[in-house]
Image 1 (cartoon, rainbow, N blue to C red):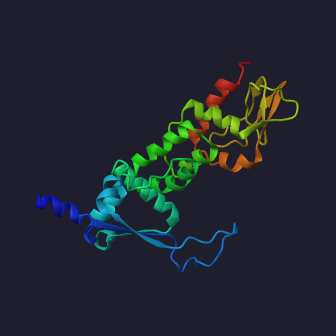
Image 2 (image 1 turned 30 degrees about the vertical axis):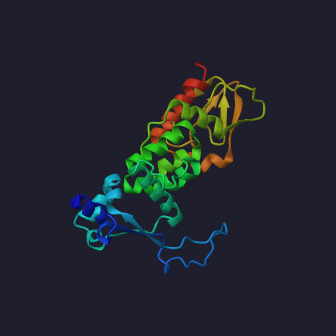
Image 3 (image 1 turned 90 degrees about the vertical axis):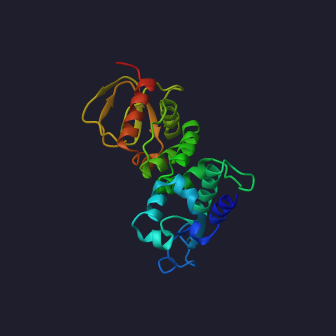
Length: 254
């Protein structure tokens, strides 16, 4: 019993903690400086976390604090690229995963906002269990911005067919002369067309610009301008999967 008590107590001793220093160094970003959208720059903050918790969840943290790195001696991991508020959400979620949501931990609700804030950190630290939770939310409630956050974090996801169909509906809108139920999607620079097509030129996987698809008797589907930039961020596998599903479900054979 004494051995067990000593082991449990050790988790709360300094040797059982790892320190995460999150946010830009004050010399890089003064805390009084405001960004263009009037939000103050994040203030650097240090988090003390039970080492065993994140070592279990994150192979990156385990390697840092047990391998031949300076973090092993200092028990300090620097994460200047992340916002401390986002990291706090990450830690709360990590604790809920590690301890099966004990009542004393206020577990964040998984929604689009949480996905956008937590996925970059979870991907950087390799927390697969958390990424799976975030992925399941996006698979069931897809949106372009939440898909892109996985793409930018270089997390490879096998998106479901239903995700691409929802994505198509999100990024397009009927243009002039369109019927109520457009049945065909083809690529173009600013306009997506529906109707029988003849394909000319080379397709460009991974991007929604530069292809030359010449439709005949088409209906217009306008690509919403606000989505241009994010669509260009989709990886080649995701773009190809998107195009395949759209053509299969939105096109008629010539």
